[in-house]
Length: 115
Length: 505
Image 1 (cartoon, chains in turn yellow, orange):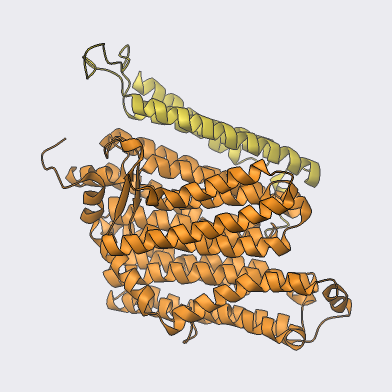
Image 2: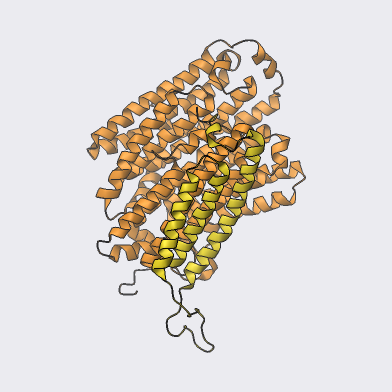
């Protein structure tokens, strides 16, 4: 399972960076979304996958029995997803406002502040 | 429970919540802004005095024992940074009273400012690497919203670059945290440092060090990752610029200091060598960029970049004296740079422009303002009786002692070019005759009370600079003690995890 996910993460990162390198700001935002999803998947996989072992403590015991999945990466991913959701929705609104004000979907026409 | 450590985070969070409650009341928001940042300053000074008396303070949030819960840790570096946050927050809050327009306040300027301060203070005080990521995001979201307050075209263009590059840096940071967790199985920075030290010759550690360096390098605006900064910092309202200039990049620098002294200090020949080159190029590219600019705030923005180079130089040399210099430099720079932005705002208020071509004659009409500019400007360039002189002196002396002559030469040259930029502003804005007659017209609209309110924080910060310059001993002693802590990470680890338990997993 891990190699498959590793390949999927690699493809996501590649697609994200390809999208971010394009001139359109809409594609830039799509690139950012893919990028954050790739990062979340990577955290999920990085601590190793354990199938069918929920980290629950049986009644009367103080520690779970057998091998269980590490719950921490999942908590991290959950936090990261929420943060990414907030930030990306800001980015979407920003792109829309930028389009309304600048009237362009082209990063090459947004160079006033660079010189 | 050691609530003292959490106060600098809780106060701005609470102040932000209270000012949200008074969404419609302009007066209450202003009162809360000044009171909240004032309390933050008091709490942070209290924290610093405790830390310098009793050593590193730790709060295990929710009473979870160390590696399992989130630890808030205030060592000397963190406490110094929090005090600076308090000073800048208070100064900018006062300044905002006079400069923030009704429109900006109606869209939540003050709640966002509190949130930003909470994020910054949180980043300085957390002892957990994922929590550091969360505070970074709190700070970023607040800064995004502040940056586009006002909805102007330039702000939109600047914001797209700022948002994109900062999100990229956050993702790199997040990925690095994930991989680090996969490798050592913990997120507590002290625990990471302990476990990483026991791993033998792991190439992965260097890879992760580089990922952290890139992520924090973008936030700190180090070469070659600084392009978002001069593209965006001159666009928002001036109080926001001043807040950003003082605090945001320094959070990146702080994170570099923390990570590369506590966690990745095992192969300095590799990581710190790269930092050294980065520092040299950062100084040089920033100052050369500034030399080509003719807009007040853009010149200052490029100088942020070049000054970041000095701070990273202190870390890269990695000798005790160099770290002292770096910390001293951070403290000096935060005060001075914010002050320069505040002065640029006063100039803009008087003459209605940031373009050097359209400014002039201020020495004749407002000699006190000229002096107010000259103090931080000369301090930035490193003139003797001011704080910048000692900051540069320590860093450069550390460079010579470490026999890094190339970078030291760059640092000296950059000091000279900084002076050139400051003199350029001086002669254009203050010395030459006022262009045309539109200046007098805009001057008449500035009330005396408003002018006082704008100058008060600038005067306060200038006095801080003078005080550090004339009486550098106390700050030097603090920086020295703090460098001592950073160079001996065992003390940090022991404070967080308790007395070392050899043999435990």
